Each structure stands twice: as C-alpha cells, then as structure tokens.
Amino acid sequence: MRNSLTDVAGVRVGHAHDPRLASGVTAVVFDEAAVAAIDVRGGGPGTRDASLLELGNTVERIDALALSGGSGFGLDASGGIQGFLAEHGRGFAIGDARVPIVPGAIVFDLLNGGDKLWGRFAPYRELGYAAAAAAATEFALGSVGAGLGATTATLKGGVGSASAVTAGGITVAALTVVNAVGSVTIGDGPWFWAAPFEQDGEFGGRGLPPSFTPDMLKLRLKGAATARAGENTTLAVVVTDADLTKTQARRLAVIAQTGFARAIYPVHAPLDGDVVFAAATGRKPVDPLYGLTELGAVAANVMSRALARSVYEATALPFPGSLPAWRDRFGAA
Image 1 (cartoon, rainbow, N blue to C red):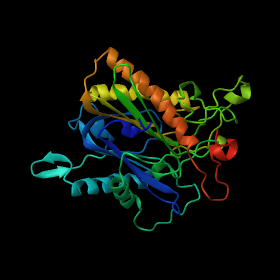
Image 2 (cartoon, rainbow, N blue to C red):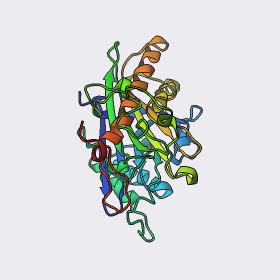
Image 3 (cartoon, rainbow, N blue to C red):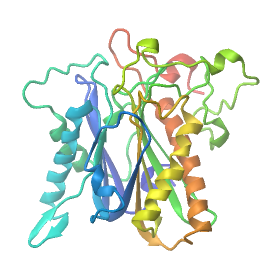
Image 4 (cartoon, one colour):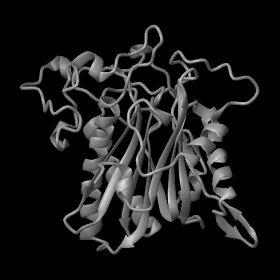
C-alpha cells in the first residue's frame, strides 16, 4: 500500500505544472473505463462535462478526470487529456468514432503571484496532455500539478492522497486538491482538524490540542471579510475497486464528502466550489446496503486524511507575500 489513489489497481496519476505560472494540472487516468458519478456541495463550482455524471444521463463510464488550476481557463485541461487518450485509441464508441470521456473541475489560483499573462491561448490544454502522458502509479504530493498554486486561509494548500482497505477487503482511496476559503488546521496552531483519523503520523502526528479555546473556533477565511466567491475550491476524487452502479457511485461520493467537514473549517461555503468525483473499477462485489455503507464510512475517513496531507506536504510559493507552508511554520513533525 502506497497510501495513495493508485492503491486501487488500474488507476494512474500524473502531474504537469509551470513554476513561473504557479499553476498546473493533475490527471487521473483509468486503465479501463470506470463507472463514475459526482457530488457538488460548494456554492461556486467550475466543472466540465459534469452533466454526463448525473444519474439520468446515458454515459456511465469515464476514461480519466482532469483537475486543474487556472479557474475557467483550466477547463481546457480536459481537452489535452482527451487528446492523449485519443492517440491511444481510448474513448466512448459511437460507430467508428471514439470520444474519450474526461470530466474536469478547476480551482482558482489566478492571484497567487504567478505570471498569468499567457496571451491568446491559456496553457492548460498542453498541461493536461503532459499530465496524462506522465500518469503512473507513483506520483508526488504537495505543491504539484493542480495543487501548485493552491492556498487555504492560513497555509499553503496542495495535492494530497490516502487509502484504506475495508473489513470486507475492498480498497478505497482519495486524491484531493485543497484551495479552500477555510482552514485545515485548528486555530493558529499545528493541529489538523482531521487528526482523529490520522494513520502512522502521515500528517505530522500532532494529534488534537490539549484543550480548545474560543479563538480556535473563530472563522479564518482567505481574504477575511473581503473574501470573494469563485476564488476557492477543494476538489477530490474517491476511487474504489468495488463493483458499483452509477447510482451507488453517487452515494459513495455523497458519503465521502463528509470527510470535507472533518478536515476543513468552514466548508461547503458560498465562497467555495467543492466537488467530489467518485469512480469504481468494478473488480470486487459489494453488498448494496451494509457493504456500501461500510465503504462510504471508510471513504470519508480516507478523504479527511488526504485533505490534511494536501497541506502537510505542500511547499510555499516563491513570491513576495505568499502564504507559508505547514512545515515552514511548524517543522517536519
């Protein structure tokens, strides 16, 4: 177990980013098309082809997912991933034609100090292609890919991942990009809201504070009272090797979304665009009631751990006024 999304067999992850741009793309590529659904809770989401994942629509399986910086410009990343997959003969068959199905979602990182003066064509399509080409079972966490330019209210954000196996032997894993309006840590200290779910010191092993003070519960918002809608989003992908229908995948996404509330304070605000994609590779049967409930409960725990790791593994951007990384402020452990 790598404690990552690729602990689910048949899933690969790739990053591509530009340090000067302070932005990038993360591609989640499935070796075989996977059943997928979506759950959106934030008030300002930015998505591409999300309607395909709605329960009443025909397409049930996807070839990949695109997570990108760049706000609305970053939606081009899906096209780059599509191009790579098309070159390899992947896609939904319509007669002799094949169309790779690559839903995507974006975070807003346009004000993080990077050079966004890219001219007529934004770079995200090419970054998407490069991320898909780089997809592998081993991938980096922190300030990489779609998380390169991500921030939270108090600390640098980034990419995180975690995994677990249920008592029934089903693997479930999450990958997250944290660019939240709220905070992943408690007050101004080193403790993570997700501490009760931490495994093997994966985000510092600090546990919870010995006591809570009223100040710890005060809102810490990116931009404070001047926070603006559309500038903040947490993206997540939860994947399992269970054999799920599209409806069951949606239920998995709904339950897994509760991991957001365990790790980010506040969350699902009108200032956020929080999105969870759920996908199932269909390799192991699962009981549709108790088994799916167990799977969702473990997925929520995994989600909270991945969200904390997004901040724990991040590194600060090299621009004046950039937020510090967790390790800059609190050390490695």
